[in-house]
Image (cartoon, rainbow, N blue to C red):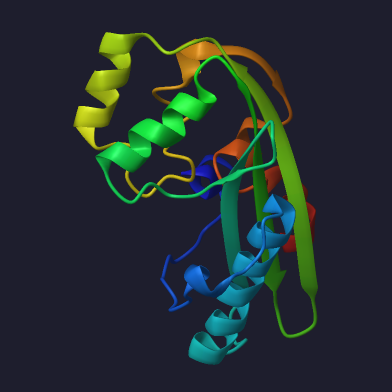
Amino acid sequence: MLLEKFGVAFTQKSVEYDEEQIVTSDAKDFVYTASKGKMEAAVRQFGLDIPLLCADTVIATKDGSILRKAKDVEDARRILMLQSGSSISIISSLHYRTKSLLFTDISATHYTFAPFEHDDFEAYLKSGLWQGKAGACMVEGFCKPYILSVNGLESTAMGLRVEVLLPWIGR
């Protein structure tokens, strides 16, 4: 969605990379290692005949805990309750690589949320839209009406700070 918004043509393909092998409690280290691992897997799988872009996103609570993708609805409930009425940092890392260039960026956007309303919260959990989202959070969706303050770019929170990438891809 972000690449389309900025008029960047792309083909999306997945690579095999096991994030469970990452051992760190630091959110920046985790997201950098995950996106770098995906890039290394992409180079092995696709080569460098076309430019490659890999990214990853993680959420850190104000106490520094990493909130990853929820495993099930109860995990999503737990993760989201840590965010309700609290502050989080959404940290994204990207790697862009061609035959002659490697560009890496780590960015963060910081949010403070009002407490989530019970009925709204339960409807979101029931919808399943939290699945596959770092921290089960959708700042462009469910969480948007609860945002009290934001410091940073929404694109970072959505998983890819496109604005910093554009000059490197000739935009």
